[in-house]
Amino acid sequence: MLLLYGKMTDREAKHFYDSAVWKHKRLQILTRDYYECQDCRKRLNDAVAAGKALNGKDRMIRRAEEVHHIQERKEHPELALSDDNLVSLCIPCHNLRHGRAPKKFKRKNKLASKERW
Image (cartoon, rainbow, N blue to C red; front, side, top):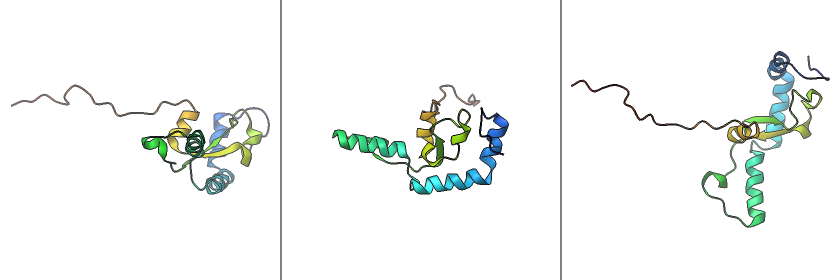
């Protein structure tokens, strides 16, 4: 059941993301955006408009795998399935939108085991 007022609980949110309605809407949005990350596209378009050159991974538009709610779903459940409130993002851009730090591989300085010969 989709809650249309107040805030969603974690249990209601899980139920929402497991629903066939959300899965169908998610595919619609990814198809609408051609499976391209809209933040990557905006970054590239802004750089071109400003005449600025981008380097490395910033020059590419990554494949979108996530559908992001612009207005948070828990705060605005009435907008949960609104096309205007949904945008396709790649995982790194989605993490940035939510303030999650990307995990980077860090090499350990110590040896895994001591040499014994």
